Image (tube, rainbow, N blue to C red):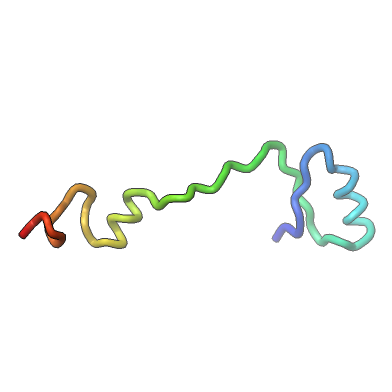
Length: 63
């Protein structure tokens, strides 16, 4: 488990936090994390609905 992440510019701060006992384990990230995806993938939606994408049976379109 990582207690806190630091950028490369914050390396000295990370070592100071470790020496002072403010963190147990820190990690240095070398690039910005990718933004989280907001929507569900179509595959996840298919799984949750029990239908394949584009399949209208079971909804109003297949009556």
